[in-house]
Length: 349
Ligand code: KG4
Ligand code: ZN
Image (cartoon, rainbow, N blue to C red; front, side, top):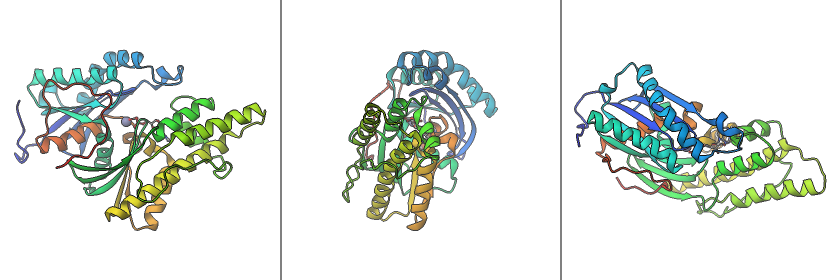
């Protein structure tokens, strides 16, 4: 396996590939933070009529899309495949069939070009999206990762050194957004729909529960909240009382945000860190961003979140994570496989 010496002085071009769920994406990154291209082909319209991602359809569409998307990323970056120094790819977590398409493409390209392959944890990628949006950002910081499948607080000590503070015991925040939206008859993906609707509602209309609020507990649980909202909607339907969807959306969103903000502030205070970084698809939520910004300002915390296009799934964040892995010699070999259940874990430098 060839290897790039970290301080050879040469610019390093990383091709990033992402296919963990319903976005086929490729990006070209020069060194750690200079994004040359970022191509995302979304399958959302395809899955919308089913109310969620259909794994088999997603895999098939990734197969059709993956090479054209990579070609487009190279073209937009004005580079040739022969210029690429290394290939970074998401190998988990995600849908196994979907992941395998990106992993297979990356392995084939790395093998054909005889360049290093770097398997990237998608959730670490979400955190690294912030390095692309904020060139001055450096570890250490506290990262709040809120995506469709995961919710976690992670202390980023260094580029390759993470300490997991806590994660969700059951549902992820994004999962709860999507499920509640579906029951309210809103289109997939539900998160942005709830976000929009909540802006018109009264967040104090319904008092939904907040779980695991004891101090020092950095685990999350959103299944109780999800059930409480579903029970409320059922009860109203049985009593034939018209529900104000905007009020329900706003009240639910407030319950999620309150817990996320409280635990983030506690984790910052315990670790004596002064920087908070928001990551994952739910980072695109306008109320969450607003509340975290407000709370950070009150407590003298520097707050970062990625540009909207880098909040949800993309390959730029995968290329960025891959670049910092390569600096530490953390390469994969051609046995790299998809790991659908990969989670965020503590990693020592
Ligand atoms: O990170 P992501 O793109 O995919 C995963 O890695 O899971 O996150 C997707 C999740 C979905 O649950 C989607 O509903 C949610 O992010 N999301 C939002 C918003 N935009 C996307 N949730 C709340 N408000 C938004 N504006
Ligand atoms: Zn994601």
